[in-house]
Image (cartoon, rainbow, N blue to C red; front, side, top):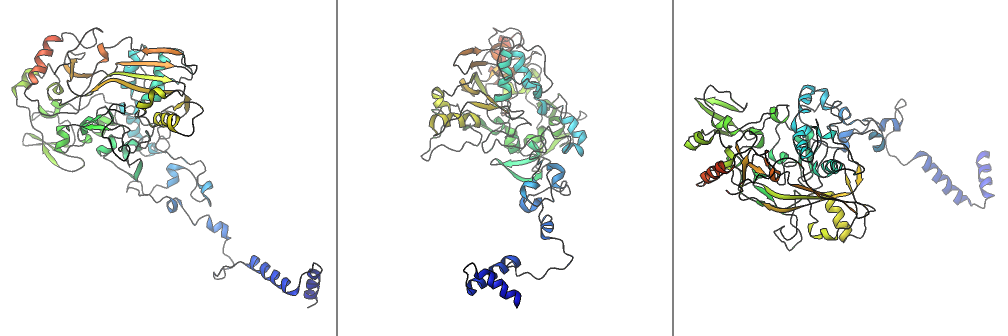
Length: 519
């Protein structure tokens, strides 16, 4: 009792009444004991903070669906981080958000799939060496590169080849395994192995389950625009100018899932029959170092006793039967019976007669500008590049402006000054261009190397003006295989006879050679 009286006396000296002192004591009691209604804890129970460290794991916040082959692999085995941390910040220490990126594959996918990874790393899908070397050779490069990562980074532009390499790294290489794609609904994808084997839709992963057999929608995340793949789906991209980007709508712009609207043309006959991309392009081709790909003749000229070209084909009574990898649909491969095949099979590629339409983008102009003077580009703000579109619209119509124009390196992700704009002289799909390849065969060609590069520096000085290739085929024509196959029609002989008479030399012999663009 004496101690209590002394306590009240001390607080009374501060002018506090008994009631006020009691209230103060009650508050102190609440603070010290807490308001919990939980049952008393056992004496040997660990401290609350230590217990909380194990109350949560990655799936508590990231509720993802895993496939059966990876379900027993811990999240941190691929993504790093800490599964036992007590806070989000601690859990995400040294987190790897893209474990399938080519720079990380040896540590992640390669631990279980080393053999497949070693083959895939040499594939054309992985290196893109065929595409990059064709462009570099046209502008005078003396040696081929083994991979896209060997293209030199160019902080300063001092020569035409510097400009070419900068264009490749920052404008062209938007569809490869090091980059996750432009910021449009159907151009986003994962990196590395996951680019094909993790399904994306509307710019986001459908799930965390890896898929063995990618659907066509996966292929189109990269093979869109006026390139092989989109044509298999019957798509031809609109021009960039706003006068050509129909349809017009009352509620603003129509959806642009691939960055630019497209015309819907006829589908490839194989697409109509139900074949997916992977029914012809197997994993052996796409993920291997083989230079050979499936041909029309391998299936349609097959005879009993010949090698069966694909593992989803089977000899049934002397006829080839194909089983579609995704749907399981079974189809008989029709053999070629028309006499024209025997007459012209060694003179013309199948697509010369059977291509319904082709990509013909003539006069591709690429401009690197280091200033934000975008007024001349107002009608061309849609550029099939989300980076370019964002900067042009922000500069012309936004409330803020960027301090300088920039574009990311599509291999490293680093930002560099200067931006690449693009335009075409003409975009058409009719009147396929027919020319000869190096073996003398008639082929469908397109002017892929009809390129013109311009550079205006930050002082608005014209450094290079419409720089064009100094070597290579006439008109920049390159043979390609349009995926627009259908019936040959009544006028196939016109494509053959006229061109067989006019084209006497291979495609790469003379720069002034003029191929026949008529059907």
